[in-house]
Image (tube, rainbow, N blue to C red; front, side):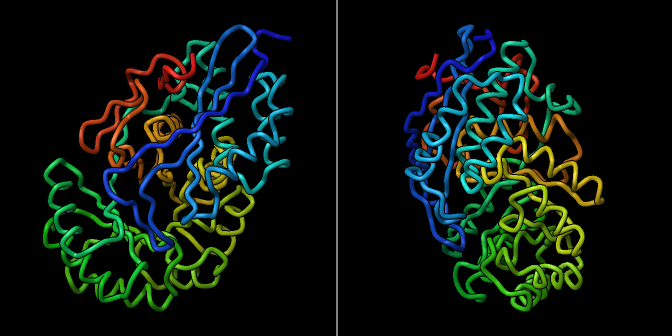
Length: 361
């Protein structure tokens, strides 16, 4: 066995309580029911990754993700981390619908690879930047909750707020948008329906939001993932950027969206399609002249720092949505990016993604 070969794959439960429910149009989550994955190399190096399934987003659960991880244990153990693309292709073929499991393994593999080489992960991905500015999410909830959250976030320096919509009536959504606009009038807005609206409902909501003075910068996945024509209609008529999220789980889907004119921005979320696939999606987006966005599910600083390394390393991401560590009631890790308000600083990471856990050494 080579020193860079994976001797053992470890899987541990990672349950992290949230400060408040994180709600999207498909439902809410009160605890991040995640998994901590480790790859233990023959030379003693340990790389770690996080699986953060979100049932309300795509149906993946902690149990299904654990089962997917166990299903590929034999293919992972014995693999060489230098051949990470070969392993990623194996995982995609074996567990194509288990994005969180694939992301966790690929994260751990690249962490181990770059830790051995004493190279920061952001440098491995290209080293273009070491700093990012993230938005922050106002989840589904009441008008008063939205107002208070917007005021609080604006006071700490956030200039882009993402509002979850589509989980209630249009009037309720508009009331929340109005509350946010009044509380933080200088902030740009992302309206994220998580596929919960129709094209016509989206366009009507956008027009009424503009009448309220809302500074809408992006519509994120306004219609269901399979409604390509609806996405195209919103792109054609909205007059603002439209991001594909649930509609985008592979580089092949990125090609399809670009060819159809069904998005102006691609939202890369390694947790839904894996870390290596994210690199391929970014390449498609750039070749097609589309904007790039980096986002995630309900993830800790481990997965979020990995995504930040990807975005900063590649550079040129127009939208950054890496905020969920702020929603967690505790941080079970050390290291990772340093955060001050919306500012994410990766310059202190000297090897790998820089996140460590005393549970895996």
